[in-house]
Length: 223
Image (cartoon, rainbow, N blue to C red; front, side, top):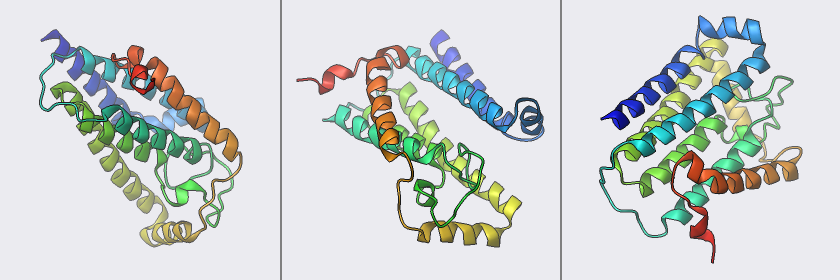
């Protein structure tokens, strides 16, 4: 049972960190102390650390198989992770008033870049990653893990949209979303650099997968 208790504890801490730190009254206090950018960096680092703990705890939980691994499982996950990495590389680090993870600065709704089509890049990437991993991981702990992240991404998207609608007003929010969707699709500045970041991130995940999640997956794609 110790493996299950570690897994449950990881889930509790992960969810509490997102429910408490990103909302009043803690968020304004942390913004004031760390600055908006400092808070985002610290929050991102904490989220990654807790995610690694959660994935590792799922790997240590007792193995209870629900369904077998489908054919071409590795390629399914690789395609989804590559798409998720591209969404993050092209969606983060630019102004995005409708979601988190964007930078401060002037925002041009007529040239929004990827956020014009995917206004919550982080949640979209999590959703892709979780859907692909759920399809190929039939163990109970992993199924709960990835199903939980699917719900987390969908609920987070709804919560962020409602929060922005409250602060901006429903009419202004809807008008901005429509204007961004009508803008031409453009990758934005530094497209080559962002593509390299995405490719490098996928390569790093393949190499580090044994230490992050347990199974070594790189050999699946080698001749």
